Amino acid sequence: METQVLKITDIEKDGALLDEAAALLREGQLVAIPTETVYGLAADALNPKAAAAIYQAKGRPSDNPLIVHVSSLEEIPPLVKQVPPQLKQLAEAFWPGPMTVVMEKSPLIPSTTSGGLETVAVRMPAHPIARALIQRSGRSLAAPSANLSGLPSPTTAQHCVEDLTGRVAAIVDGGPCQVGVESTVLTLCTQPPKILRPGAVTLEMLRKVLPDIQLDEGVFEHLSDDRKVASPGMKYKHYAPKARVILVRGTLEQFQEFLRHQREEYGVLCFEEDVPALNARCVTYGKEQDPASQAHALFDALRRLDKEGFSLVYARITGEEGVGQAVYNRLLRAAAFDEIQL
Ligand code: AMP
Ligand code: MG
Image (cartoon, rainbow, N blue to C red; front, side, top):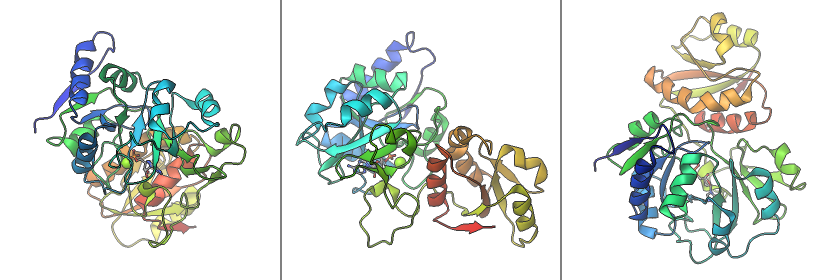
């Protein structure tokens, strides 16, 4: 399949390109699209064939459900069994934006889209191109991250080109994603509600609307394989570079000392300001005191580790404030939960 790259520089002037992408989506084709979190691999959420094609293009296990993206609240009632009472307040506080809400699904949602579950995950993205494509196609769009399954999520159109050329009809290039990690996923199907995946909408922010919300135990812990994961996308190893990644928690001085004792060849994933102090090949992911910069840089950094050809990587981690929890959640999976405390 030939993959077109449609570069949008001005959402008004490039309306013809948006219409082209919207027409492909209406036909049931796959289009990678920018959102404020990461690039999504979009298709008509209510067309079972289109949804099945997403799994095939990504090599995604069929039990890992897709997030359905809408551009207005009016699109939601037909997609769910009933609109939960908490949704209105959540939407007022965090939509459009990086929050996904799991609710009981209506029969309109094909089981391919819901990964065989009786629930559906819904998000209203903020990115103007994502919103324009939902509106112009007239479809709710299923859109998991536009990477090959298991690899780091794409935060630039170039990442999508690397993973999906020949597998999708088009890639819409809207520049780098602002947030850089996937949306916060929470479920309203449990009592109390739970965060299944941390993102830029943090636990502290959500508590203001849902005071009893909890973090699912799978967020920071490796659940044994026989335990049922609440969010199938949060499995053990994910976002993984080819290198073996080991998380190392400690100060810069402790990290320097730790590296001095390593005999095997290694690369380092660290903060920008660490580089001058480390006599090592470094890839950086933002600044230590700025978790938003870490989120923004993380997935590109994980991809760069492979480009550097490292087979072993020590990743420096420190505290987890705000969106730092989401960064740590992704790093744990990139490292298959391998962490050393100095
Ligand atoms: P992705 O869009 O690639 O970031 O993956 C979607 C994420 O949302 C995965 O972690 C899924 O497991 C999660 N998800 C989607 N639908 C549901 C659902 N119905 N219940 C629980 N988790 C879901
Ligand atoms: Mg994904």
